[in-house]
Amino acid sequence: MTSATEATAVNDKAVGRLGAVDALRGFALFGILMVNITYLASAYHGTGVEDPGSGGPLEDAVRAVVATFFEAKFFLLFSFLFGYAFTLQLASADRARARFVPRFLRRLTGLFFLGVVHAVVLFPGDILTTYAVLGLILLVFHRIRPRTAVRTAVVLFGVTAAAYVLLAVAVALWSGGAGPDEVSAAADAARATEALRGDAPSVVSAHLDQLPDVVSMLVFFQAPAALAAFFLGLAAGRHQVLGDITGHGRLLRRLQAWGFTVGVGGGVVYAHASLAHPSTAYQILALGVDVITAPLLAAAYAATVLRLANGRHGRTVIAALAPAGRMTLTNYLSQSLVCALLFTGYGAGLVGRVPPTGVAAIALALFAAQVLASRWWLGRHPYGPAEWGLRAWTTLSRPDWSTRAR
Image (cartoon, rainbow, N blue to C red):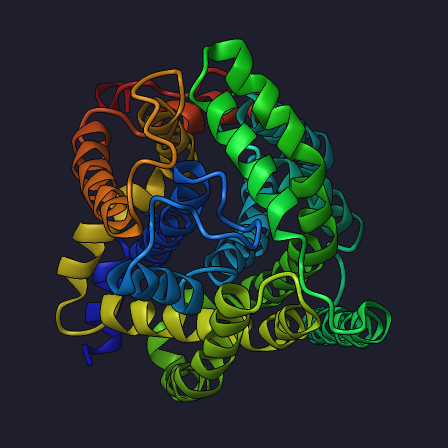
């Protein structure tokens, strides 16, 4: 471990921002890509029916790894960081002697608009609109005490998990052991695949057809967990936890111990249920297990990245991940754009034609390209393009476009 002085020096990179936090955000961006690209590459993903073009032991292993270690984990990291950033925005508005509520509401409307366009044109599984709506709740309760915020998060996770357990029992009793309607699901996925390979109106129509199912998933699964993570981030921000990582070494080690044991165990249950027993009571029960255990694995990831970023090789970790983390909005949107050009009729129309191993390789290559592009861009501009636009709308000003203007 570095000394506190060395850690501070590492963190003060990237134009006065916390470099370790940017590195964590960049790592979360990679995890989001690994999950989202699976939905963009196959209309069968999440339907409970195997894509006919992606069978085989190796492909099954890749799907299992993504489900265990990535799905339902990384949006929690982003949500935590959203809540943490909320406290930084409060402080920024205070320093600028600006009215915070109008400024934050403009930010939320900007996110919501971007999210709607993103969901309709590029990827129905958008998270920006959810963040914009949940941000209103965060605004209402922004004066909540940190301890109360943590308790609220625990209750949200617990109630959501209990609801899934009850739903699983109900499904088991009512279904009488009947499995999912695989024929109907396969037919729907085949139609969606053909529509996504069509022209632009066909792609948009396919996205609109998928939106009701996506909204249901967001409302009943992602939204409660994201709100809970918001509150955890708010509590951490109030105590400025990420500003003094070296002072929380014991906590970070505990998070790693619990996350890489209980968290991974829950991920295995979730993956087994999702891949081997989809659309069953067991899968619903596994969702309840994941609601409780996924935050632990996400916390272990965060603890690991933060410890590495503040350790002996901290400068290397920050240099590798922080540039992408400083441009998360731009990179998040560009990930969907590139994938849409690859997999839909906007471009190559490869949906359903690339196996999971190829999809994972594309994700790795795309993120590596984004890291390099982000580093190049930030050498010339203080903000990413989307970040610049959102900041301009939020503050009703014209931020510096070039670093030379500073």
